[in-house]
Every structure is written in structure tokens, then in C-alpha cells.
Image 1: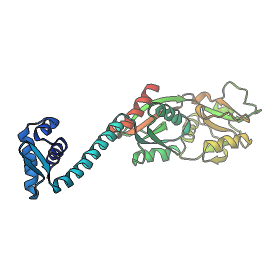
Image 2 (image 1 turned 90 degrees about the horizontal axis):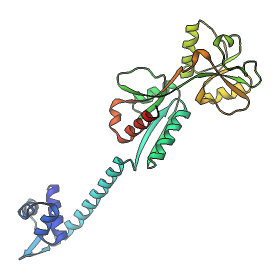
Image 3 (image 1 turned 90 degrees about the vertical axis):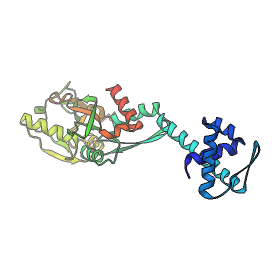
Image 4 (image 1 turned 60 degrees about the vertical axis):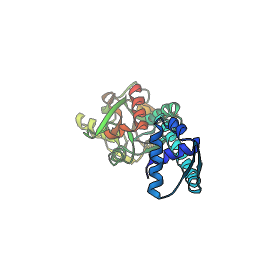
Amino acid sequence: MSYSQLRAFDAVARSGSFSRAAELLGVTQPAVSVQVAALERAYRTDLIQRKGAKIQLTDDGRGLFALTRQMLALEAEIEDFLAASAKLQRGHLRFAADGPHLALDLVAAYRRKYPGVTVELVLGNATETWNALLDSGVDLAMLANPPEDPRVDYVPVVKQDMMLLVPRGHRLAKNADVGLKDVVGEPVIFRELGSNTQRTLERRLKKSRLTLQPVLTVGSREAMIEAVSRRIGLGFIFDREKNEDPRSVAVPIRELRASNKNMLVYLRPRRRRRTVAALIDLASERG
């Protein structure tokens, strides 16, 4: 049994004629006759009774016709499904990020353009996000200052300044900017070791030969913002991450302007997926 044999039989049963079936399929009438005859011969059954120019389905023929109708209806559904996926009228995208702000900007633009695609956003620190990408747990990731890796392609999205987050009323709150020397001796709050914010800060401190002593280490930017607002210490945050909390003020750090290079990253084979390629194109346009 072959697909072409079933398709030929269905066309004959549907049209009631070998000649009309040939027209439907765009082949010659003898080709249709050969396919149907081969099907009958292979299963030692009569499917069609020929009475001159007229045909009539046997009991087996009627049973098979009911099944080929289901088969070809399902084929049409599959074709519609794949066509809709190709046009991004449906689909699923798993997207990771080391921070919500830029990722959600991109997701919002993507959803406006492709409302039929479902996006799953997975948030974690920089280390967790990078590992999820390399382990193929996600399709793409938004990361700041990602490591170099020959398996990965990179799309620059935006550069950000690191800010010093201080309680409102603090002596540095009214400054246009600050230097890291201005922070020495102040109680400071650090992020966890896997954090891109912490890695970027520590690289700059080492280069400047400065030391800061943390009074608290926190595992999220939300905890950082709240701890600063409660006057536990001064924190560090990138400019797109600062919120509208009236209890704190973000001041640019001179040595850390444009220190955060946010990039959309993906394993190279993933670009073949239409949903992935569409997000890459969107990020490239915005970058």
C-alpha cells in the first residue's frame, strides 16, 4: 500500500469516474487505473466495480473510502497547522533572561507582531540563564556581558550604565554622578556571586584597586532595592532596572558608564526555527 494508491482510489470514489479522478490529480487516466488495480491486487479484494462508463464501490470500497476521507481531512489539517506555524500564526518560544526589563520590552514587541505565538519567559541570574541556554533548556536568552562561545551567536541590543542606588536624603543623592572612590567607607549591599551586576562591579573595583566591604548580600535586584530603601546600605543597579520607589535615588557611576552590554544570544542551529528567527530579527532592528 502506498499513499499514491490511496489517493488515487479516493479520487475515483469521490468523483465517480476514473477520467475525472485523473483530472483532479493532474495525471493520466491509465496512471489512476494502475494505482487502484495495484491496491486491489495487493490486498486481494475488489474495491470498485466497473459497469461500462459507470463505477460502483463494493462494501470494502465503501469502508476504505470512509477511511481515506478521514486520512485526507487530517492531511489538510496538518497542512493548515504547518502553514500557520510558518506564518507565525501559532507556535511556542522559550526565552530566558537575567533580568525582566529588557526581556519584557522585547516580548511585548514580539507579541504585538505575532499574537498567536506563546512566549514562556524564564528568569534567573546570569549564570543560571547562560547554563539554560547551553543545555538547550531555552531557545534564546537575553544576557548582559555574556561569555564568548563558538557555539553561540550574539545580537547586541542595548548598553546600560551602572548606577549607585542610595536612600533619598543621602549625601550622594543630589550628585549628577559619582566615582567609586566616593563609595569607599560607605555600607554597601552586594549581589550574589552568579550575578552579572556583581561580576561587573568587582572587575571595575579590581582595576581601580579599590575595596568595598558589604554589610549585606542579596539574591535579587528587588531585594537590593528594598534593602537600600530601608537604609541598610548603598546598592548597585543598572539604569533600566531602577524603579519608581520614592525612597531611593539612582546616581550614575562615572567608571561604569555603558558597562552593561545586553545581548540576545542563541545556539546557532536554533535560528532555523521560524519563531526563533523572528525574535532575532526583531532584536536586530531594535539594536
